[in-house]
Amino acid sequence: MSHFERSHWVDFARGLLSAGERTQMERHLSEGCRDCMSELAFFERVAHAGAGVREVIAPEDIVMLARNIFPLKPKQKPLLQRLVARLVYDSFADLAPVGVRSGKALSRQLMYEVEDYLVDLRLEGERDSMLVSIVGQVANRRVPASRMVDQNIRIVSGKSVLRQTRSNGFGEFCLDYSPKRNAKLLISLPEGERHVEVSLNRLVEEHPAS
Image (cartoon, rainbow, N blue to C red):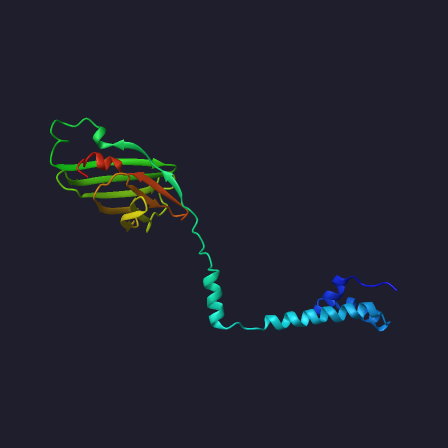
């Protein structure tokens, strides 16, 4: 007498067989195969015990204890890809009349670019003040009509966020900032996975007292 594989009896006990397969195996049992009857009885007990375990509801204090022992790891946010912008224009590089650059007021324009993006910065302030006003605009030169609205604009130093704002419907923004070494201007991009990075060390050069 031929016998069915154990895997078949496992599926039989769990009710996973098709009607035709189940009929064949029931016919085999009706022929009096004691070995297969014994195996089926064992797998039916296992299946019944497993079903009972699934229905057990653990007490809340046990659940909390288990969570404290094995805390869920928070999902890590993917790191943003940074696009380091390079300086392409600095108004201080232009030849200025005598006394203009040594005056009390500071007015300077910087232009940066990276890939298809342009960042225009205008700096306003007083030389004896530690505060500089940064008025800027970010634009996509390849697709001028693309909207840079409500982009996150931050000035950071290390892991500290020094200033933060959001761009308007024209990609414009304004921040007051006290220059610090190694500070960076970060501008998020519409796709959400990249940001433009602009070094602000040039501001420190104009404020040596900082």
